Image 1 (cartoon, rainbow, N blue to C red):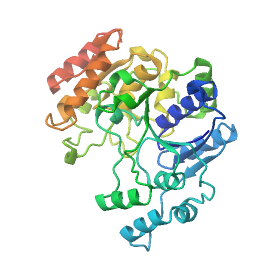
Image 2 (image 1 turned 30 degrees about the horizontal axis):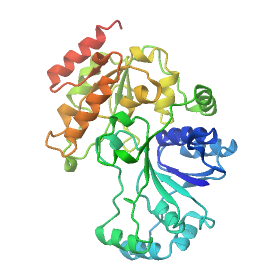
Image 3 (image 1 turned 30 degrees about the vertical axis):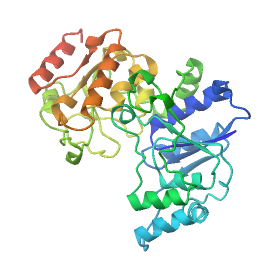
Image 4 (image 1 turned 60 degrees about the vertical axis):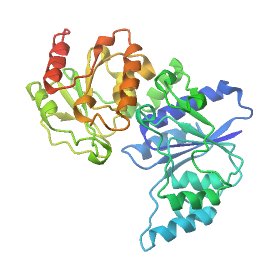
Length: 364
C-alpha cells in the first residue's frame, strides 16, 4: 500500500517521520508499505529539512510545495477550474504529473487545495488526519474549504466526498481528545529511542546552543480578536520578565517572526521538539505561553516535565466557543503529570506574578 503524507510545520514532520518509521517496522501490519512526502514551503529551514530527508531516501519521493501563483487570474474562476481539472492544476502549479491512482491513503493535518486535487485523482484512497498541534485537541481540525459554494463544487467533482469523509485521526495523546469523533482516533506510537537519536543526528544543524543561564522560554503567539482572543504579545506578562533579561529566550511565532523586546531571540532554524531533547535539565526550565503546542509537546512526546505557565485564562474571552474544551484538555494534561503543580494557569496578572515567584523559588 502506498501512503502520501503532507505537512506544513517541523512538528508535523517529526510526527510523520515517527509514523513512517513505526509502519516500516510493523505498526498496523500494512502490506507492501511505502510512502511519499510533501512539505509546504511555509517555515524557516523547510527546504534544508526536505533535502536532508530526500538525501537519506527515507521516502519514495519528497516534494517541497510552494504557494500557488494566482497573478493575472480571477480567484473564484481559477479555483473552480482547478477543481474541474485537478490533473492540470497539479502539473501547472506543482509539477506533479504522476499522482493519478497512485495512493491508498492520503494523510494530512488540514484541508489544502493541493491535497484536495491529489485526492480527486485517487478516488479509492482513504483520507486520514494527522495531529496539527494543540488545536487538534482544543478546537478543531481545519477542514473547511474556502466557501460553501467551493465545498459543494468540490464534493460534486470528488465522488461525493469532502474532507469530513476522513476515516482515521492520528494523534499523540488520545487521553486529551474528547470530541465526538473519538472513535476514529488512533494513537501515534511513542518514538523509538534509537530512531529518535537518528533523527537528532540528521537534524543536528537545527539544534542550537543557547547561553547556559537561559531558563525561561517565552513562546510568542499572534491571536485574532475575531476568534474571541485578545492580541497579546509584549504586554504586562512579558514586561514582568524584564527583571531577568539574561534568563529569557524569546521564541517568535513562525507567522509573526518579529522580536522588539530586550530579550535574546531564538534561532529561526530551531526545531522546538528536538531543542527540548537537546536542552540539559529541561525539567528545571520554565515555558510561558498562551496555549502554544510547544508547551504540551515536552510531556506528550518525551514525558519531560518542565515548568509551564499557560496564560489563556487571562487572554482568551471565556465565552469563546472552544474555551470550555481547552479547560477540559488542560485539566487532563495536568493529571498526566508526575508533578501536577509544575503546570500553572493564572487567571490574573497578580496570580501570574505569583507563578513566576514559585518558579524562581524552585531552586534556580
